[in-house]
Length: 68
Image (cartoon, rainbow, N blue to C red):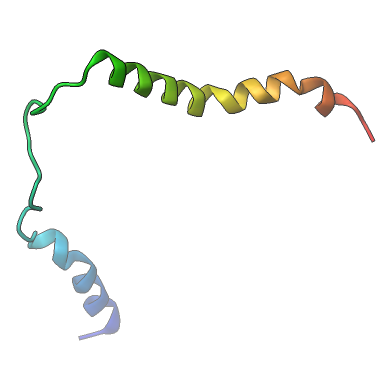
């Protein structure tokens, strides 16, 4: 058997025979629903992570325009 065939079989083996499911994996609705404070904290974090760098660049746009 050639090296390429053995490598392909080794790479495809986990997909062909999946192992047991991870413990603690729960499908369905959450056991403890999120409250309004947790939701607000999540939205604030996403806002800061996504829009914070863009706002910083726009606030310092004049600094970027200056040529040295």
